[in-house]
Image 1 (cartoon, one colour):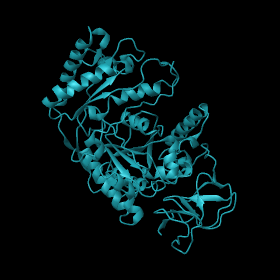
Image 2 (cartoon, helix red, strand yellow; image 1 turned 90 degrees about the vertical axis):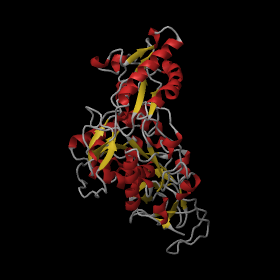
Image 3 (cartoon, one colour; image 1 turned 60 degrees about the horizontal axis):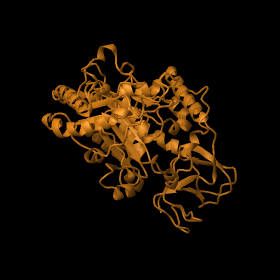
Image 4 (cartoon, helix red, strand yellow; image 1 turned 45 degrees about the vertical axis):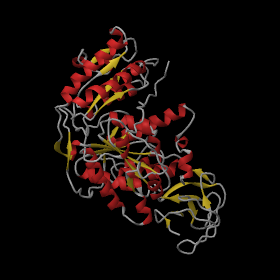
Length: 502
């Protein structure tokens, strides 16, 4: 029976397949009980209170003694304390020996005045408030049926509906977070710089909070309360959309350097294999992209919190490390106000997949960032100002993280999963990578890349990472559509809003 031990200091390993009691492992260790796939096996007798080590990191301390060959899970561990944020060393792990990318260009859509190019050519229609979504959705169906076929170089029309805009404390201390997210979301490079904003007319999120003075005009803003009934509203929406489509129709792909590409990394439905197969492969692809000049962002505050000291060591400047600590501290306080901490993160599926606690999940999660230096830290929904590896502070919730990464300008997202999810985003292609080959076998037409081949020894991290790099470039260039895009499996947008709702 094959098992995987990540670090020489580890006193646990995980089986590649479920292993019944009595199974003899490599080295002669005999299992004392049934061990589910991916769950931790004690490699020696461990005493009550002894540290359990995986990834070379203390996950927690045993609540009872576990014999060699015994099972260790969330019920047998007390989590290690949260790492301190004050006085973290920075710049002590700066790697310059990134692997060489096999290509340095992609075919994208340049956007005047923007650092990143588009990977798709889409008309994005932003709303100021949920109240207008019903009318817009009906009009959207007509636009796709009647208008879109006349503009063959436009890929899609997408309604950027959200649940913010009214019934909210618009001037609250943290209201700038959802407002910034919406402002930048409508400027994602896949929308080609075209602005189409639909409002009701009485909401708190007025158009001037999303647009600049030179953008506040009838070409960009349509207010439903200015129109006489539903049919007039729909006709006005159709007219405005057609004018935008005429502009977008002129866009063409150009061969561009990878410095014009921004890629998001995210994981969801993680398991014990995520940190040794899918995420390291994504991390290697990230290093290839960064080495070729691209910008890559990874996120999910609670899923890096227990490895924050490892990330600080990779920050190229003290100011970057300080902002990393500030974002972590803000989120600690945000969670505390709700009566929880980062330990509220793991899901039942995470635990069923072998992740005992948030520390183990975090050690696997940060693997998707590769080894490149961290050049910038973003607050939720901010846009990068530098090329390279960026930490974008977002919640770990899949659709909130995805929405906020869209606001930060990604043109492709890579989504790693162990338990499986049909997640997708309408404005960009999402490439899904599974951590176990069982998942690919189960969902052959939903999972794009099988990283489980690393666990079985059929591929290396470098081979899978290079394959994923090529998939990213092909998806960004329009040469390849991931399954979620082919089936139009699109999650609702969910802008992060920590401000009060009135």
